[in-house]
Image (cartoon, rainbow, N blue to C red; front, side, top):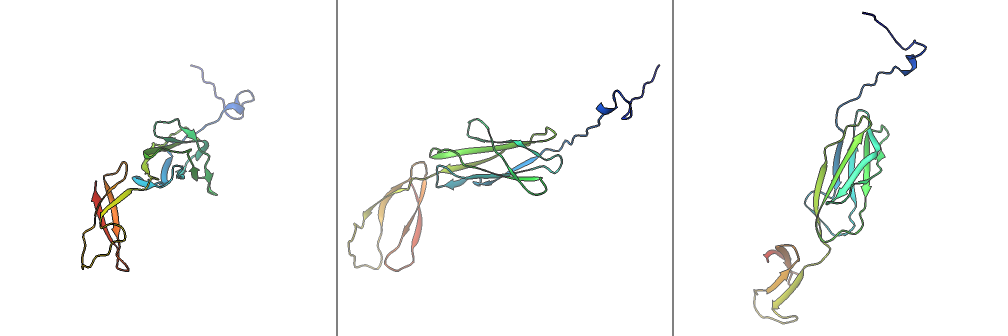
Length: 178
């Protein structure tokens, strides 16, 4: 058979010959806020996460965040000086009360897509309701101990912490099952 050799010095094809080596290591993501199982007291919590890739680098226009079953939205990272770690911040429009799951992922310049990373948190901006049935407000008692009775509720939660303080004494906290 015939053998034809073409290299970079070939006047016709030499300029088109390029060897491109692509890394196969996946980039990584880490959600730094809110933590998994956190309670947040805002319907617009700041979501923070990092993306990194020591090989080809994370493609800045291929970083995504999704809340619950919503559509993934692009998030622009701010990279460190070496360009290997990007910090991302995203503030959603108002979220409803209750649990939410945020998912983040990214792709590097070589086309490798990270594993999806998730964090589930609860939005709780509503205070619990407390009803004290005994003793009534401003009643004076002449005993060294007293039983305080009443009820509490916090929509969506089965336990509530109640703190009682009498005069300047140390407060006492009890967990109440609803």
